[in-house]
Length: 630
Image 1 (tube, one colour):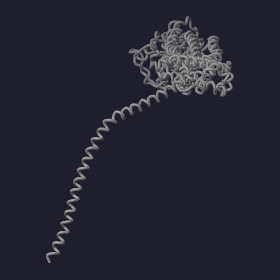
Image 2 (cartoon, rainbow, N blue to C red):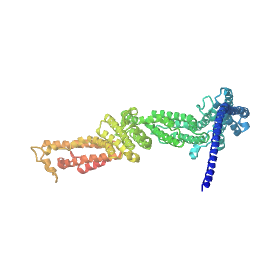
Image 3 (cartoon, rainbow, N blue to C red):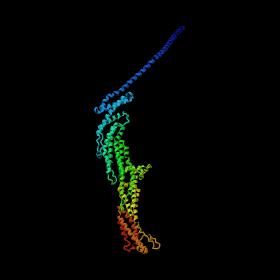
Image 4 (cartoon, one colour):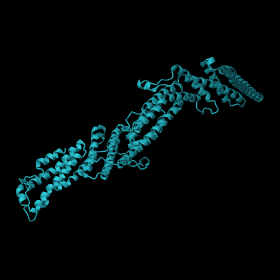
């Protein structure tokens, strides 16, 4: 039993010994590997120290090589524009007519690009080349400018504006074929100008050329209309206010507007961007200067004939203002230039309102004689005609009156006043106030002149009444004046003069009516009792109750009345009265005299006992006589 256990143990011991032997071998191998790693690491350090500088030098060489390649490429790029000079110079110097416009523009474009590249390098060595390219570009641009001017000059024959206005035709524009050439030429000229000494700060030469050629065409086409506008105002008869539309400024303005609109259509097809506005302003500058000159000449004439021709100023304001807004809506340009051209006329129009008032007063005060029959003077119709004419210019007047402020037209210094303006009323109310001021100035001034020259109250009363009648008639005949003077306040202010005329005329009949007053007999302390009012009057008993002295007084009253009444009737019939005035004054006289005489006659006609020695008129004959006054 013991032997098997030893055998097993021996085998296990043998395996353990094998394992220990393998472990020793592994330990030895590990030491060798560690030694190899140490030696490898040492060798790697040596290699790294040896190869490092070589690697660094290699990277530097690669960067240098890359830089050299880039320099070569830059040199190639620099040589390209220099090479272009030789290729394009022949084409450019030959001119567009020789090589064709498209080829010429292409060559000029390449030179333009080359010059751009050269300027971008900023190398001193390129300055000579840049100068040569500039000369070449300038030469090419000059030839294009000549061609641009030549093409434009083919379509500048002056037109007859009236032909287009009367037939309501649009003004002619540059033909489409020419436009298609002008547009790229203008662009090339503008691009070339950007390389000039001013580096784009100056005006595009194409705009300058276009403005010279087309501006001259516009001016030539309008020349006759400018002259006609001045001549028509100088030849106008001065026997009345200016009549709307009789001056040539309306036609002149319409023609100018049509030509500007047509020119704008040309310009937007030839130029681009901001150049369009500059081109239109430059092209129209001469025409607008001539237009402004014409307005100044018309303004001088208006100022010299303000009473009759201020209406032309209002017409000009209306025409020019409306035209400037229409042109601005279509082109976006020129409005401020028109407003500036209009300024002198507008200032004259503003001052004309106060001047109309003052001139009305001066003319009334300077009338040397008045019609002895109480007739009116031409000034009345002149002023009312002017006011009627003014109503046709409500548009410009609204602007002017609003800028002045209510009532400020009464002062000649109102146009320069810095006081705040009261513009609370609307323009219609302002116009009504101005018309009333004019009418009052006219009637007050003429009434004052009448008081100075007419000694008779009757004549003065008729004179004032006739003036009112003409004013009232003119207002009734004008729907516009009636509209502006329809308010109760306006009617009341004007009717004041009717009442003043009537009152003054009736003062002349006061003496006549006083002969019919007998208050001294109706309240006597010692005589007959005060007669009862109403009921029949017994003239016989009344006359019998009078003393001899009282009877003589009544007889004198009848005789004085007869003389005064006959004189007044004769004077009434001799005076000139408008139909409405004669009827109105007759009724007023009847209303005063007839009831007084009827009462007096009823009481005292028996003083005459029907002999007609003292009592010339019975009630019926007096009434008939008064009725004959109308």
